[in-house]
View 1: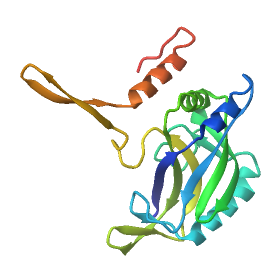
View 2: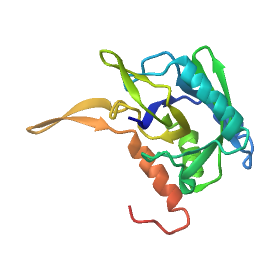
View 3: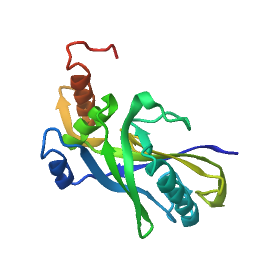
Length: 208
């Protein structure tokens, strides 16, 4: 049975990429990084054969990328349809390096794209998440192999990795009288603050 298959990993952007993107106030922002890996069990316990990724990347290059419509969203829905109102970026190039798929991505001047740009400028880690439709078959204990009916939709940027909470960090223990508790800092508090600042920049804040 075919289902939505979503795979997420941290998208690493170097300081040099950010510096180059901000060299001119009106410059377009591009970032590059790893989009996916074949022949490796991922964090969701899924295994993508190289032949499947190779086929889908060739289709993606010849179709959406060549036609300038390799769009993605900032946070994605559980749907195979790309919501144009939430588009944040366009993938302009894909290539292989060993078993890794790399992409060059243009951040668009859309509301969602501007939020993504500000997050990257402020060194906020984001995840890049592939979205596709396909079926799975047990391969071995704890591993599911993606089958030949897989169809790639594209890549989105998301706030959390496949394992929720893995970016939480324990800072210290605090004793206050008889209360003993651990203070946890969530880095996404900063994300929320940045998003609020952007959305409220015109003086009108939406209700969250």
